[in-house]
Image (cartoon, rainbow, N blue to C red; front, top):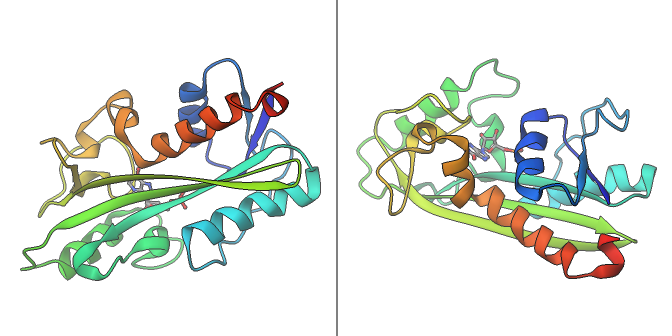
Length: 197
Ligand code: IMP
């Protein structure tokens, strides 16, 4: 079957196609010819994932999913959360200011607990389903590692000593919030024969 992924991020499409295997062909927004950005207007991960999936579903009426994710820091009452991509400002060319802002806010704070959360919204045959992935960890004082993206250099998952940015993609994908949510979605699709045909 074909499944549209409401994203322009080809890296994410590649990552997810890797996890999904050959049974399902993942199509990006570029693949289906939708070239606009979909605004993230919600105040929760669920709302944003739904808005992205539903905007495209209303046009194409084909099986589609969208994800929304971010970092929730306990000492900051869950911030940056849904604002993770625009924490220190909108449309910044590199990610460093977001990391600097977060580390400044945590300066001297002992509680370093944080978690990445990912929510996927799937719409098939006019029905909407949600799948969630979480990974707990700690925010370190200084960035380490060059892989990955976003807050990866300052996040060490519980039970590990490396940051996400010091892991290779396979290592991160075994445990990441996004891969957990994706696996739940794929298990669901595969368990519903009328969907996976
Ligand atoms: P989105 O789900 O692509 O909108 O991601 C929102 C933001 O959350 C990203 O720009 C990153 O700042 C952050 N984020 C989400 N997932 C990860 C991850 O796996 N590593 C690092 N940062 C992430």
